[in-house]
Length: 193
Length: 171
Image (cartoon, rainbow over all chains, first blue to last red; front, top):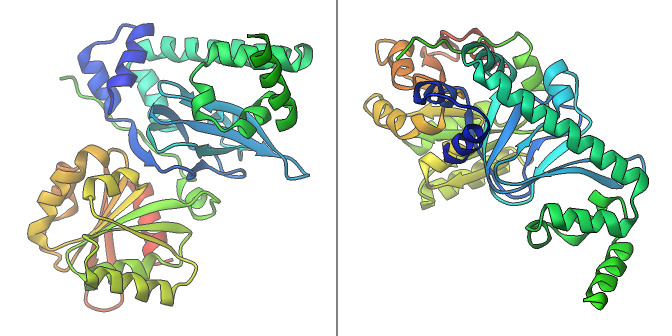
């Protein structure tokens, strides 16, 4: 249940067995079935989730009822609405399991306690948030300046497993393009090979 | 091992849980159909998904039909594995015989960490909340005593979990 969390944390910081044992007492083990929600729009994001197994997506729905996918979270990734988690304001996002998931959830009080008692986690989460900021900036720049084909190529280069696990219409939504455009891009790439 | 503390929750947990769009999953573990029914009837009108731990025998299928007839909008499912049911749950409600409480706690403790665990008891002199809290060391344990009449006596050391249990069972 905690092996992947330990692996990921140990890749970034050095912690003792005792510290990790304490860490385990703060995480809520949670199974989520495919299509169940971890969070729905309008609720406060009370937990940040570490994905031990499965796949989640976060998305928002616009006034016309169109879904816009913000993020996928695969095994070893974290998923949460940091703004809502930290401010306790309602979230604008929905978080849904695309596969059966095993998650480790941490509440804000537990997270603060962890940072207080195990200062190495301050460094871990600082690096995590830095990386998230960089990824968000890259995604924003990609949205503003890249062609649809560049965006698609970057996605499959960065997350090769994504094509087998995420439905095409969700990949199109994540890239901000229509299904037809995605289909045409895939056709063009296949024709060049 | 050094003495580590446990988190102190802020006061808005209960109000948030009660008006959430996201449904909480409540696992119900009961010794008998009657005990299961008593719990499910108390929580059926709350915004939750009920996951009854049972072996899918005829008696429980009948209970499922009765509950769904009485509360047509309820999201109600059964699951035969207690550990998996509690792993899925956000909140766990036990209504088991006194001698079953300890073995059930042993089975679920790994997946009940930081979850609210509500345990019903018929007798006030049975396993008290502190005994169960020792077994489920990292859970937020609440004991509910059926005091004969319709009133319930609800006890626990976690103020917020206590408030949540009160709103769930009495509200």
